[in-house]
Image 1 (tube, rainbow, N blue to C red):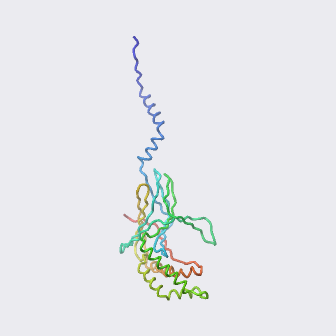
Image 2 (spheres, helix red, strand yellow; image 1 turned 180 degrees about the vertical axis):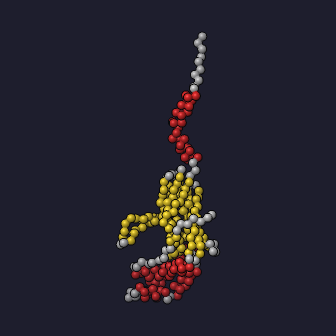
Image 3 (spheres, rainbow, N blue to C red; image 1 turned 90 degrees about the vertical axis):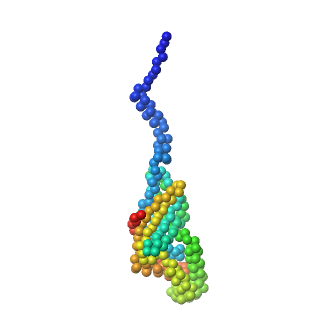
Length: 262
């Protein structure tokens, strides 16, 4: 009577079989590990300098750098900034408004920069995505009030200016008006960029409401603060500049990215 034989795999055969199975499923295993086991890491690497602004849009900042995403792709959904004036804890809350895109050409001896509305973007895993962001205030009440002031000044400038006036004569008429003095004093009272130490809190929001925050510090000294305040009068006088089609020169202090302790 024939006897049944049982084939028992050797240790070598078992190992070879496991390796073969793993080789077949390797792409799915790597995909699973990348998606569920390797933690996403989003980083901001600053470049150039932080630019401080004050004009008809009020106080705001511009900064640039690159965003890096490790292990997984990231969808950057928002970049916001909170500026804190340390001597009185006054806050300036800003959100991204536009991306500034350098264009490598010159028009009239000046470098050309274009802008586009800020919107979510994707950073592929292991890649760097350059960002040059201009921020704007999220305080609707203050924004609306500034808009009212500059609209009133523009109307005033138009009504005061005569065709035979020089630009300096037109500006002198505007500066002598009661509305100009009232609006200038109001803007001076609410001017944010004073002599003080400041902290910038940069927050990147990505994927499903994940956030990464960076803190930087800078200082505005007495001389800078005094010079910076001149932007208020110059921005009011820009209503005349527009009528005469000449550019308005405004101070834009620049600060290094210096990491602040948490």
